[in-house]
Length: 353
Image 1 (cartoon, rainbow, N blue to C red):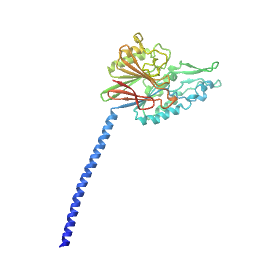
Image 2 (cartoon, rainbow, N blue to C red):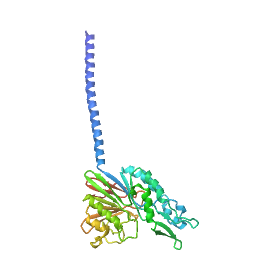
Image 3 (cartoon, rainbow, N blue to C red):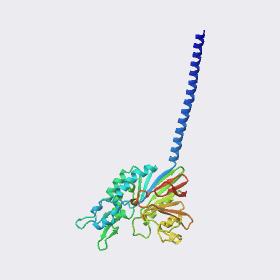
Image 4 (cartoon, one colour):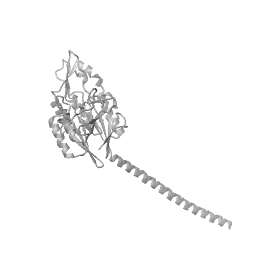
């Protein structure tokens, strides 16, 4: 009798344990399922945030140089600080874009240090093929590159032996531009072009302009200005950013002690300055938000007040060859453009659409 009771009790306990295990298993499965749902929901949320944000790196003036040792000894001596510039650009493209999750990189001119350069008297022809060699960097980049041309990209550099100075001549500009168009994909339709990014409901229009040539009354040639006007008509009031090499010289407007150009006025441009050229175009289009430039080898920015009341930011990033931390991250959201401080992710400039 007692044995039967023990047996029955064991059976009851066993049944109870099975029931308890099923309940625990059910609760556990629900917890796991809930965790999985939360996990994937967080992934989807993160993906949505990233989808509604575009990140672009701005750098300038890498001055990549090839065959420097074959150039005139005086020139080679003056440019020896650029030895390693190719490695600097390659290392930047390898490390920084994936680190900050950049969608593209924009380089505003002086991609190479010279299109052609004088070599020793014993040689017959100038050092060339710089564009063809730079093409390897462009093609090997794992992130899209959008480029503009600078003065060095379209120049021949000779040497004044009497003064031991380099002499910049731009008679090869047409030939140099043809070489860039032939070799570099982003220039395939010309040395100025534009691209659109859509972030949420906002269309951002990026204009990549060509102003490396010196002998002009304006920073930009008349044909290019006509193209800009025509393109601006097509996009209405949607925000525009411009990228080019040579900057507009202006003093320390924001009072941070670092001017775009020292000893220049801060109350520029005046109404008369905006009567023609690119300044007239900017003054007539309040949707032009910023200009990203190089050339000066300096990290600085100014908010330029135009006669029509709008503030247009001129943002300069220093030369990459001077340090691989000379970059800025431009973050596009649906309502704002956030521009980082040089070399870090902290926002320095916030521009509303």
